[in-house]
Length: 350
Image (cartoon, rainbow, N blue to C red; front, side, top):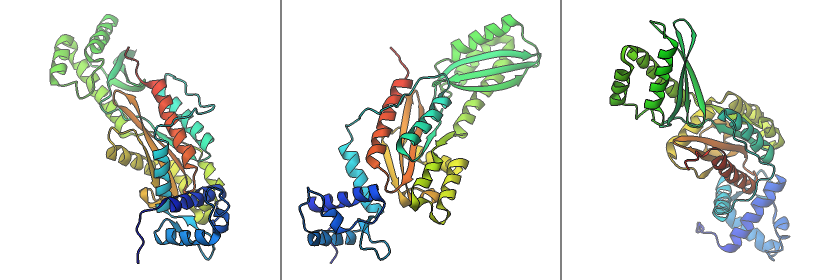
């Protein structure tokens, strides 16, 4: 007869003991090892019976002919959900974690990927923010040579995009200055969606004989923002940490996984799926084994969180490691990182 899927306190304690021991050793866990846990005070025979029930319920499995058990994906899922519930309101200090605000967000994200990999001993990835619905912060037009105009667009988060346009007629310095003032006074603080036909019509009317220049600039501004949305940037670090875990190195698994981290196309698809399924959410998610769609990560656990820099700037942070990763440390690290990002980059509107 099939067992009820509900776990009583004793089974929960034994399952946690099995998972914690396996996380530490990487070796199948036997009843004799579990009986040494002081809080259990149970005989090896009783523990064996409970382990048999847990195996039938699908929380643990017996690899090969070993007498020991290891957690199944279902067991890891139960353990992770327990930790997330316990740690939901708990954020501890992240020693030596310094996040400094610098002009270029890319530099910060690359540094954070390195810090995450170093502090967790797993691989880390961070996506650049999505620029959808992001407000324009600044536009600068500059002459580089006759007939050429450099357009520099800065959006919230100090993301910078450049474009070159060709001019039919050269602009005097005073005309260029007036165009810069007009564009910034009319467009600063607007999203691409808010630059509608009324705004464009008014802007071109104010530009007078230079309405065609305004048209070209607006086209390049929109194109630059769209290119930023489509060309998702992924920063990775700690790929070589994969070799620290034997279960990820057998049968060429490591090279395949490292290839995924280096070439990043599968990661871009993975991050896009996360963004589509969790629009506006910033909570931590854990993908165990087959729960991730990336083939090379089927033997891994992937822990992700969406960061929010305000004004529509969002991205994803992820940590990739073995299923026996130190979930408690990873979850705490990610929660602390979210807080650090808030402090470093949230726009101060006071």
